Image 1 (cartoon, rainbow, N blue to C red):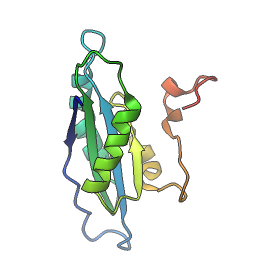
Image 2: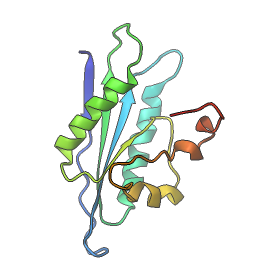
Image 3: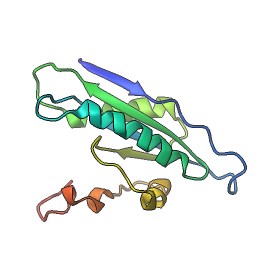
Image 4: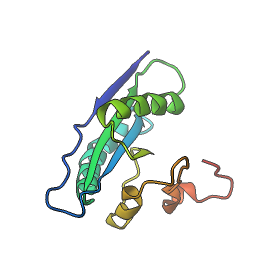
Length: 143
């Protein structure tokens, strides 16, 4: 109820690169504009083109960005529910998905992080690589 999804089209695999092994990365972004507190729409307008360029630079990688938006329904922001919806949609959009990444709209990875995004975690495990941003480096953070 009150959720809207804006998937990007899966990117085409680069031609003529690598051994043909492919990575398929889906990124889910839980979203709700929070004016006047934070202009998340402006952040999203920067995030999408940045991530499309970032992901297109990873050799032999198909990708999809799924923005799952919660309406202005007066309820608390439900990041968990949005990510669950994002995962289900990502499986439909990119069935060969090798990595599922949950992402904040206000964090933009630098080019040196591409190998981290391109390498699937070991089967059955998760990796937390947002610790490169100061937002996630305090001692009591358990995310």
